[in-house]
Length: 207
Image 1 (tube, one colour):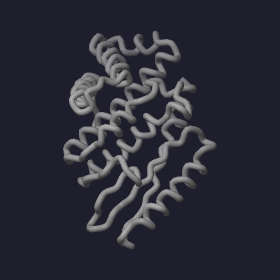
Image 2 (cartoon, rainbow, N blue to C red):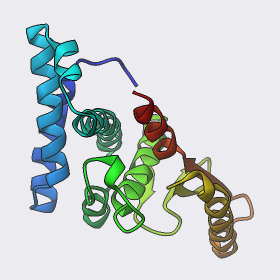
Image 3 (cartoon, rainbow, N blue to C red):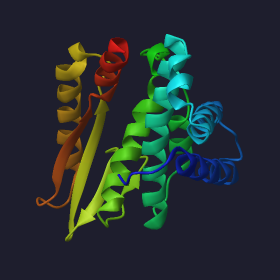
Image 4 (cartoon, rainbow, N blue to C red):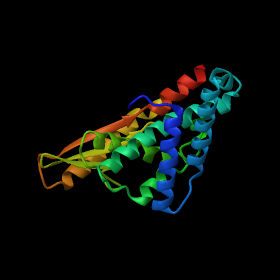
């Protein structure tokens, strides 16, 4: 991921928000929150008051702003890569990815579908940046063609440290099912696991 300014992130985020409206005919609260938070960071940077701005935030707002920044950067980078490769991103995938709260800390197992789907988009974005054309929105979560064989990726985002083993077991069963349906014995399966939620919350709790 290239180094960018807050203003550049905001510009890209606003462009993608407009594109989303054209594709889904909806506006998303989470994107709006991200735009407000990144805009506040950009303004404070331009005014030379970034340190004071961050110091003046309460713990909850500071956490939300940091979540907005990290998620915006990853989302922008992923969507730009997928669009460059002319990848089709199904509308239900986009709508699911932008569901749920902006603040990672208030997410629970009933509202984590959005960021789980966002992780699938992030993995597909990495595949696209490598020059391939991934498919999203089916079983498995992501697939792409590599020299005539299919690479199947099951994406799992860990909600808590205790859930890592369970996520791996579920993904393993899903890949076994997907590969059993495959017509080519050369097809391969990959399990992609995100522990970012556990890591980010540990870091933010330490601030």
